[in-house]
Image 1 (tube, rainbow, N blue to C red):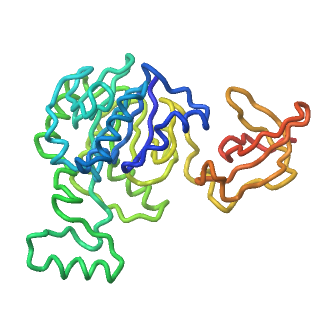
Image 2 (cartoon, rainbow, N blue to C red):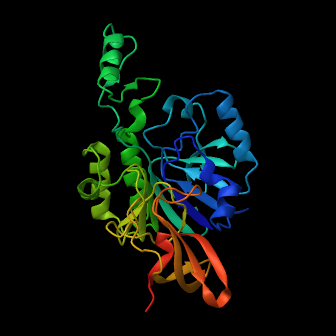
Image 3 (cartoon, helix red, strand yellow):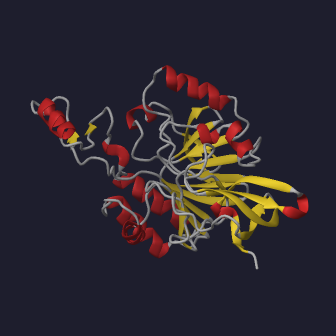
Length: 330
């Protein structure tokens, strides 16, 4: 089975067996997890990188990912390009952590995936700084004094975060071979019009660029079932064909709430003594809310959760996420 998630930024707790067990995710051998950019594994060849590679090598699943804007592209380029499932890849950990290159079409479990990673960094208000510049120290101090995030060329920012003309043309040529028809699209950022829509919802400063405009061109040509992307640090369905991912892990074709129906920390929709119908594994149950955790729990802190008593079972179901509550009961 294929699963998807958003940016991990070199923090891999949600890809652990402990996390899977906690959230009843049965991810094992022969399964794939696709990270929609900003994996963050390739950042520095240090002991942390070595430890993480060994950790992933022991996992039963295969981790696939596309590039984000928080990757060390010089480090990535040290790995050779190979062919895998119909497209170009780089094996960071042989057969366990595989980068899906830009502009490729992969056949995975009988479904086709078009991949195109990359995005513009939007945390550069303090500047993209050159350490060799005579103004470097001044610019760093200025950014710090104003509490502005900054990046350093070749250390925390790489120009390859945006694609080359060659990569964009290769993507178009590969899509022409399929008459612009694929099952799924996997990217880090999204097309310009969709990005503008997301920016009207959330607090962000992402602007159109060569990549979002390229993806906009693809939107007008492509025939696909669903498009998954990350980058904007939220989890919701933008519309019926586009899913923005961050912390959640979902299976292919699983739906998230649309924006406006996304639970907000500190603002629970339900209260104590409400009778509700909720999802538990593959079943629906009805019970009364006993405890409201408006800010989530120690297990998860991205939405309110509830302890719900099902009287007919004489059982208290703890830490039920707000997204798992289907409706109020009559």
